[in-house]
Image (cartoon, rainbow, N blue to C red; front, side, top):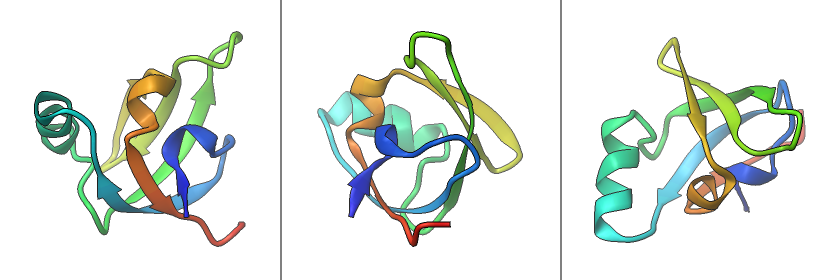
Length: 77
């Protein structure tokens, strides 16, 4: 299992667990980062931070320090 900040462009993963502080966890869940959902990395900024993720037909940019709190299952597309 890896964290969301480690995936590359066009990788698709399944969210396993969301952690972090209570307020960060609530914010991530409200954005749709819910266990069992599929997420794909669609864009990485020139300095590698932040990255944009496609979830529920929405593109959401997350800083790597926040994405590290999301554990994902990656099969190695």
